[in-house]
Structures are given as C-alpha cells and as structure tokens.
Image (cartoon, rainbow, N blue to C red; front, side, top):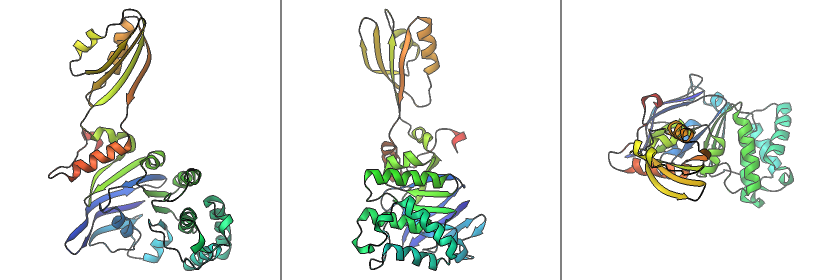
Length: 324
C-alpha cells in the first residue's frame, strides 16, 4: 500500500500541491486525473522520489520513501509522460542498462526481459536504435523499462500516448492484468481509458483533491438530474396519473401510437422511482419493454467537477455522508 499524508509542494510562491492525502491498496488500479496545471505530474514525481515534498509524507507499507530511496525505488516502476530515452542506444541495450542500474541478477533479467519483450510488443525493434523508433514504439519501450524489475507499484503517466488503436487495446489488457496483483496509479487524459481500467478515481484541481471515490459514484457528485428513458407496450397507456403523483419528475419527451408508449423523464439525483414505475405499470396491465437511465460520460463529469472547483469558494461535496 502506498499512502500520501498532507503532501504539499511549492515552487516559490506557487503552491502546486496543497495538503493532499490519499492511499492506494494493492491489487487495484486508481485513476489520477486533473486538468493541465492541476498538480498531477508534480504529485507523481514526488511519489517516485524525483521531487522532495515541501511538507507531508509518502510511505510504502508505513515506510517513508525518503528513509531509504534506493529500496523504495526498487518497489516502484514509473513511466513519465515525457519518456526519457537515450536515442543512441539500441532497444536491447537500454533494457540491459536499466537492469544494471537496478542491479538485477542475470537470471532474473533474462526472465523479465522475455516477459516485457512479449507483453510490450517490442520484439521487432530490439535491434533498432531508439532514435529511429516511432512515438508508439518509444512508449512501449518506456513501459517495458518501467515494469522490467517486476515492481510492486506502477505509476503510469499517459501510458498509451502515441499508440495506435490495436496497441492501445494490448497495453490496456497488460495494465489490467498488472492491476490484479500490483498497485497501479494511472494518469491519463483519455477518459475512455480511465473508465475501462480503473475502479477508483482521484481528481485533483488547483493543487487540491476535489474527488476521491469509486468511478461508478462520480455521477452523484453532480447535484443535477438524471434522465430516464421508458418504453411500454399495452392498450390505452396513460402516464399522467403517475406524473401527478410525482411532481418532482419532469417530462422531456413523449411519443405514443396504438400499443407503444415512449417517455423520457428528468429525475432529481436523490430519487429512485424505478420501483414505483414497475408497480404502476403492473397495476395497469402494461409491459415494460425498456427502462434505461442515462449515465453522464466521464468527460462530462470531469469537466463539470473541475469547472466547479475553479470557481471562487466552490468545492463540490458528495451528496451523502456514507460516501465520505
């Protein structure tokens, strides 16, 4: 487990990271999101020891990473957003160089080298110079370097940047497998990637954490409304009685023919009327053929939350105490 407590970092008068705290358990993939300039990359650099915090602590299993930086580094794999590669080296050379820096035993290096070559898809470029590789292959080499020593904790900053769609799917599957047994912190601007891989999302803005919750609960942070599409079959369908009993529900759209009835409803987020609808429909002898609650995309949620947090004296809060 990696734990962050009251972490801060200042650059002169700029407070880039402002007293943030969170922890990430083993066997999980956590999305770490934020707009440009939010303090995201600064936080990741402190977590791997590249930057010294101005205040607070970073521990792995209750041991500070600064007490023994070399031991902490052996437990962490890091893929930075801007991948640092020596362009004059060949791909096979840079893997050997990383192994030597990490003092990996020869037998472990040979075993792990074969693993990263196969899983990162770099076999065809082993004998090419780094400087001749495409951006996509450079990214895959960087990921291979990050996981070569089989770290317990992986910190990945934009891991699929520059990859084509097939490569993205392959790397996502690799990250998903790694997340089953390792602690993975994933930073990405690709919201579909976060939704596909992460169980939990931390959103940082202006140096502060504004959301830390399960990805499926992010909708609940937006005190807005939900949209429900309902489709019924039956004769003489009339939904006006139900709507009169629920004045908090608004009709957005309604369409009806002889036996098919479609309605779209606008519902306050704290209300669940699905049970009431089912009973009302059953009592009238109609049939529900479709009931669908529209979910906001992660892009919409991210935009709304970071925009709200940027407003003066504005900080979105969860709607219920149990979500704290």
